[in-house]
Length: 102
Image (cartoon, helix red, strand yellow):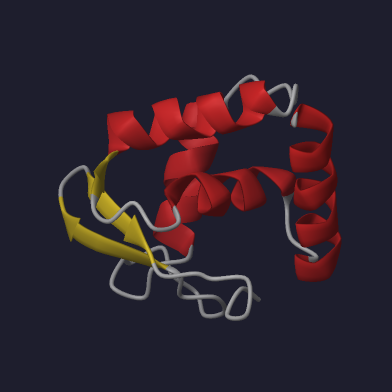
């Protein structure tokens, strides 16, 4: 199962042409509704562990930067993909699906 999950993640990554951490973030959050930042970290770690993918050393701050940079309601948003929703401090959700992911 792990090898098929890894193959699916690679295929999805190639199709999407985005950074690996962003891909893991979206895949970990999809369909889970509003999540606390701490739960997002756990979901990303579990997703990466299941695929035997190491996380970068500053991955917590990288996750926060990705969330903010791709959420139109945050000041860090500079255009492009608007795939995360900021609900209130520490509460986020993901609107991306494989067809919408750009």
